[in-house]
Image 1: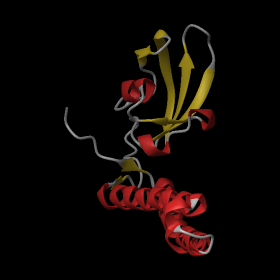
Image 2 (image 1 turned 135 degrees about the vertical axis):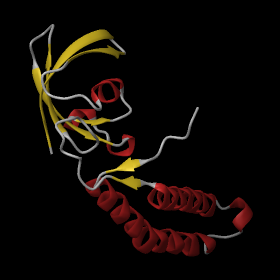
Image 3 (image 1 turned 180 degrees about the vertical axis):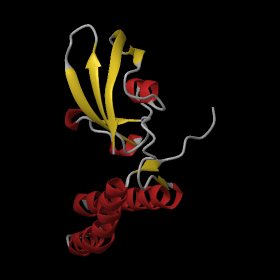
Length: 157
């Protein structure tokens, strides 16, 4: 299976960069202070506070490393190429043919997806199915709940 690029919108880039900055400047200091305090509770080998603080430090450093890797290797989609086709960054209005319900979605990379906020990944079944298609097209989508048919009503930035 080929490696998929990590795709981020400018908003996603800003969010992850802010998280990384916060972890490096504030969280590292807080954990270091916790370790320093825990060392005062006695012998390190039998010190549960120290062990918990070291575990938190390892988790923190792992998240920092993961964020640095993501940010270093991400493909930033500045603006969707507005040629009327769905791409990462597009705002899309769909109608479910069966129910008649209409919904607006923002197509984002997998790390930014939040279905509750109608931010769907370009790698999700629905996102993948509509990528590259335009308004007026009807598409059959294989969803976890079975096949669904959607009409793309509009595509915007």
